[in-house]
Image (cartoon, rainbow over all chains, first blue to last red):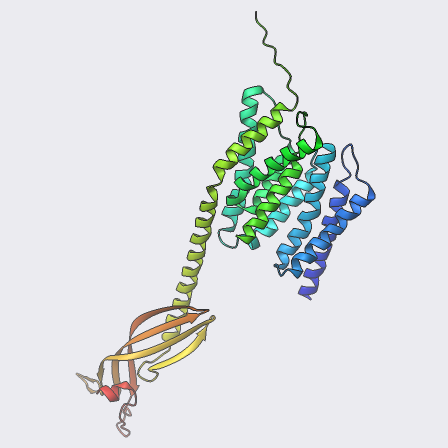
Length: 205
Length: 153
């Protein structure tokens, strides 16, 4: 009975996360079309199922199923509209809290919350340095939320490499887009790529 | 009065932020060692706590063991295989006091306890008193001690 309830709750959460991914991708000035929304919706059960097939813990599989559509939606929305929805950041933070005990079985909260804190601190220090110099804001609130969630996922030790990859991917994408001198760089896709790579590297090392 | 005019540089502040983040991120790379140290310390602490709990359980079980009657044995407690072996330190076949001969044979034993679980092992030694009734209180039955007291005595 308890197992059935847990499976139902997990399935419901995964479908809700997929729906939220599709829903939030439509925020901003460039609403996503149905193909994008459906792809994001499907990405939740596909990611969760793949994680289960790969033999990961059920809790981690649910966290992955929540994180994948929301992270993809955040990257998409930031790329298209330059915003990251609060729902996306909140969902990613919750998924990070769910995944932390499985990803960091020892000193869980010191590593996970330390990762979120360090990620926030690095972004704040970077922004503060620029603000002190030119009185300009470089990052939005969504970037901080996304970085904190990424820190929860990858842990204290991988925040540095994750942010380096994030910056590299952001600059590369801007160059590919032909907007190297543009006023707005989409940091979301870089953050998603950097922290995803860090989480995978953390599992492999 | 001089007015400082800031030249508008589109996108430059974002690049600056990214460069600053990259620089600080490089400084954060050694945190990996901190994460490893934290995880290792927590792992060792958990293992020590588990071993301590197992020792406490084994000691509680040994309270019920009379080493003279059960000089060796094994039992599973909380996933740990606990084995014990008692070695006599001093034994008295029939204890004598100021009231005369006791009805018990007594002995002092070193009980060596070894605990094993998933390839991990730990051991400790406790000193315990063993006893065995060898005479009827009314003196009708008298027998030799059957445990190590007899062999040593």
